[in-house]
Length: 193
Image (tube, rainbow, N blue to C red; front, side):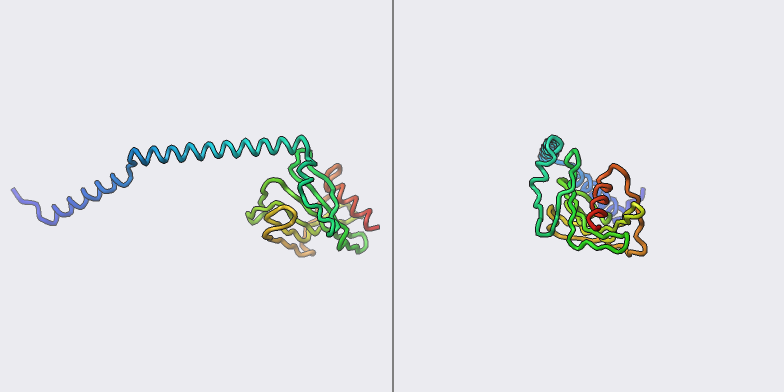
């Protein structure tokens, strides 16, 4: 009968130690299991409470959309005028005649949108408000966005990111009847006369 070499014995022992060590490392002690379960339960309770607060806030905004709008800064120094609010209070819009420009039947104005809940721009950044430099074609009932500046907080405050479009490449979109866009379009075209 041959004796196993010392290398073979050492290799076998090393594999056994590695297996034993790996088994211990991946197992949870009863204390760890209990702690992780408590943390998971707490996270679930916090998520449930957050969802309940959000549902209550949404219900309050739906019941009284102007209540939320009243918390926003009207920013009258910038000429901002309230234009509308969603029936459920999910957004509010403003416009200004400051820096309004007319070139033939084209009118360029600034618009402002505010949100009570975080939104994401195309880059994935969270924002609560934005301003948009938009051009209306009053002869052809269409609009195109030239510049959008997103703000991380309401009332166009906080950090900002922007998206600019080359005027020659900006796509025209039709003004849809009965929408908030039509209301602002009508205001802009009438104000520029």
